[in-house]
Image (cartoon, rainbow, N blue to C red; front, top):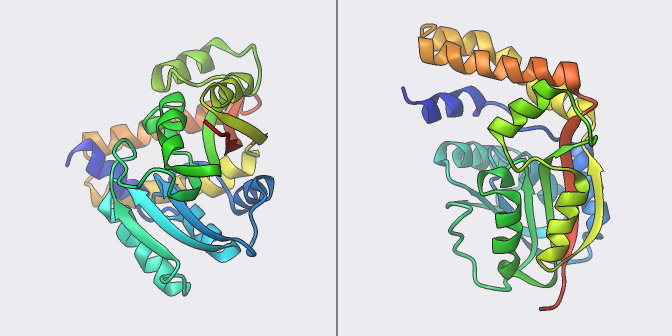
Length: 251
């Protein structure tokens, strides 16, 4: 089994495929000034199995297009939406975040939790902007340094895994450069990592390894995930995801 299929198999039954939480999503909704009085068209880009999409659908009067390039994740979201009575509010779309099919200026909101790194933060905020209506909202979470000085081991790890990791001031500057007014920023709390992402994933390790016969590929994936978890536990005061909420300015 190739690496992508293994990743999907490890994560598909996770409520989240990255750090986040219900309270964080709702806080970002509040920062954006969104409420049920507005009729909104929202794209949730890199939605995974749809944790954010489901909260948005429950919290807002919105038509949500949940976008991912993995059909298995979208199928899981469709199942959850039906169970929660939200199927009429959430439509899934198989597409790459680098080649979105939306018309220009067609969306009130673009949402993306823990996924914009796949296209790169600066590239993503620049490219996605054209799909927002004037005054439209961009809300994304992005790997972010919490301090200017950090342990070398942490800097080396994330510099290798995601070279665009930066300080909040850098991310805010990029948003401003590319035509946004920043409405708010906050770092995700440790429970978004431990309780909502890492802990549940660790709970799936044993069954995952058994299912794949403790193959070298499966063991290598679990080892890599555990290494990241250990690094976070040791250095959680230096790095997190930052949630950035911004408004599209006039051209």
